[in-house]
Image (tube, rainbow over all chains, first blue to last red; front, side, top):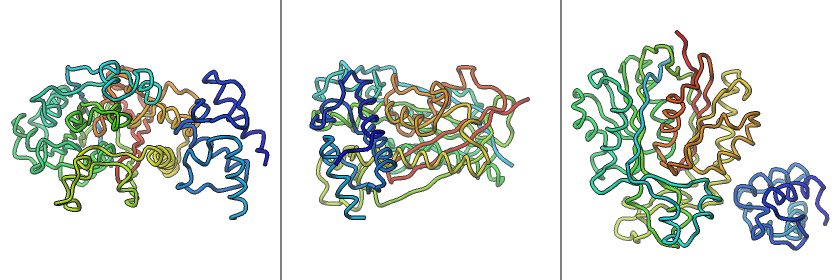
Length: 82
Length: 326
C-alpha cells in the first residue's frame, strides 16, 4: 500500500537533516539514519494520525518500520486487525 | 500555603572522563556516543569518593547554614552501603543536629519525590528547613565492555542539594505543585536487579549492573513526561506559553529535544541542558541543572519553571515552581 504524503514527508525531512537523500521504498531507514529510536516515537505519532491506526507499545520496534515497504505492510495488518 | 526552594548547590568530582577515553572500551566511537546521547564528557568519582561525600560537597556549595536544617532527605541509587542509607553519612560529616534522616530510592525521579516530601513536611509544620540531597556514584557499577556500551556511555557521578523552607526570600522558588505517578509493570525494563530478595541465591553477575530496554524507556519516557507536564499545567490553569524554563531530568539530549518538540516550545533554548558536560547523573541531574540555572542569573521574578522526570519503575512526574519576588 502507499503511505499518506505527510508520512513520507516526515521520513524525507528527517533524512534531510542527516544529509540522507530522499528515501527509497527499500531503503533501510535505521541504517541510513532516517530513523532512530527517538525519531521512531515521533514517527509513530505521525503514522497513527494519518493512517487511522493505533500502534500498541509492544509493536513500536524497528523490525516493523525498517523500510517503507515494511511500514506499508504493518499499516495494512493493523487495519485488518481493527 | 506553599514552601520554597531557598538555596541550591551542586558538585561534580574532579575527574573528567571524555568520550575519547571511553569509546574503545565500549566498542563505540566518541562520535557515536555524542550523536546518540548528546554527551561529550562526564565526571567520575575517584577511589574514596562516596555518594554521601558528594552530597556533603553539594550541600556545602548551597551555602546554607547547617544549624538551620531540621530534616535531611537523600536521594540516590548508589548508597555508600546497603544498610544504612547515605543520609546518616551526610548528617555525621556536616555535624547536623540529631535530625531525621531519610534515604529515598526513586532513581531519576528522586528530585521530584524529594521536593514533594519536603514540601509536605514544611507545609504541615513538621520541619522548617529540609535539605534534599541528590547524589550518585554510578561509575562503580558500570561495566566497561562493548556488551554494555550503550548503557555505560551515559552515566556520570555528581550531586545536588536543594533546601526547602517555610519562608522564601526574593529569588527563592515557590513549589507550586508536584505531580507523580507510577506503572510497576515495567519493573524489568530499567534498573539494577541485585542485591535484592527476588534474586537471592540466583543472581548472575550482570544482575548487579544497570539494565535498560532502550526502546521501551524512550517510548514511555517520551509519553509519560509529556503527559505529566500537561497534567500539572492543566490543574494549575496554565499553558506551555506561561512557562519560562523547562528543567528536565538530564537523561539524554535527544530525549530533551523530543520533549521540547512534544511540548511545542517556541524557544528550545529555554530547556536547561547540562548533559553535554555531566552525562546522566540520575538522581542528581535535575538538581544540577536547576542549580546551574539559578547561578546563571537568568531567572526573573514571576517566571514559571516546569520540571519533568522519568525513572526506573517506571515512575514519572513533573514539578511546577515560580520565582518569588521581594
